[in-house]
Amino acid sequence: MRIERYKDFISEEDRVELVKWFDYSIDNQVNFYAGLSRGEWGYQKRCTTRNTDKVEYPEVALRLFNKVINSFEFQDNCHKEILANKEGIICVATFPTGDTYYHKDPTNCKDGLSVIRFNIVLQKPEDGGIISITDENGKEVKLDVDERELYCCNLSDYWHSVSEVKGSKSRYIILFSMCCDKDDWETGKIKFKG
Image: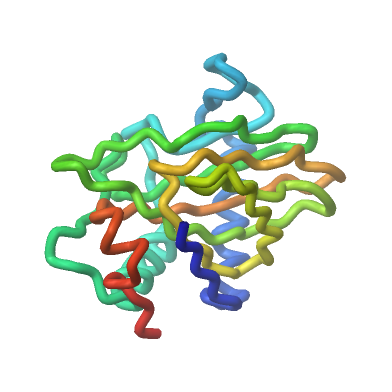
C-alpha cells in the first residue's frame, strides 16, 4: 500500500482562504450536507460536499486541483473522478466528537480504475482526527497529518477511518479525486514530479 506525503504543499494564504470558505459555508448552511457515518445518513458530526451538485467551490480549490494534476506524472488512462459536483473535489468537515467510520471509499471510476485521493488537511483539531489505513495484510498504518500537507493514497481499495476529533476545533480536509489504475499507483508509475 503506497502512501505519499508532501509537507507544505499549499501556502498558508490558500489554507486560510479555504478555511474561511468552510466556515462561511457551514455557518450559512450552504455547500455542505450531513454525511453518512456508522451506517446512518444525516450524521450531524460530519458534513461533506460529496453528494451534492449544488456546491460552488472557490477559485483556490480549482487552482489547487490543477496544482495536484501538474505535480504528478499521471498515466494516459487517469482522469478526474466525476462526482455529483462534476469537479472531482470533496470537502469534509468533522466537528468535535465526530469521526469517520471504517470504510472503503465509494467510487464513480469505470473500467476497473481505483480512486486515488490527494488530500490536504486545512484545519487540524487540537487532538484526534488521526487517519488509520489497513493494508492488504491487515496491518494498520496511522497518519497524523499536518495542516497544508498533501497525503495521497488509494482509498477505494483499502479500509480506513478517522479517529474522534477532540478539542474545540473542527477538522477540515479537501480531497482531490483521480481515477487511476491501482497497479500504476502502487508500483510508482504515477510519480511526484514537484
